[in-house]
Length: 145
Image (cartoon, rainbow, N blue to C red):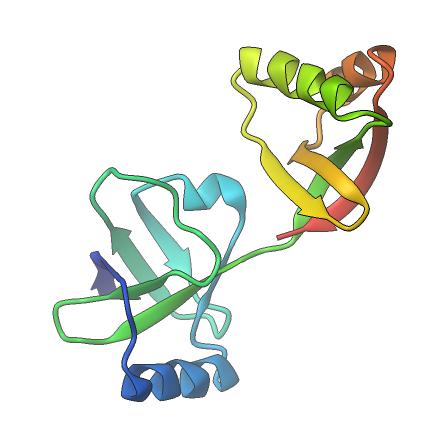
């Protein structure tokens, strides 16, 4: 089993081409948020090969991170789409109030800003969704990486 132990910062053109070929061959990792939080784990590529991940305990793997092993082989990590709750509000202060309450419960959040305004996303939890609705926030189920 191949063990990947280093995050690659910048990619050369050759490495980018290699990743494109690997992607065509389904030789990449499609990982959900919970798995990407771990620094050491066993994973299965989309093509079905087992690999090991052994990284320093710093940070979360993000979608499009690239890992390298001691042999110079590359492995791309892609964030798997998963069910999440989208939170929006009619005013930004109310949304930040919701973010405060979620943060007070140590809920991992994703923030987004678009032309439609700000939004928060968190892993589905009906109790938290009900609390936010009671605060006057708008709740919607969706799927995102």
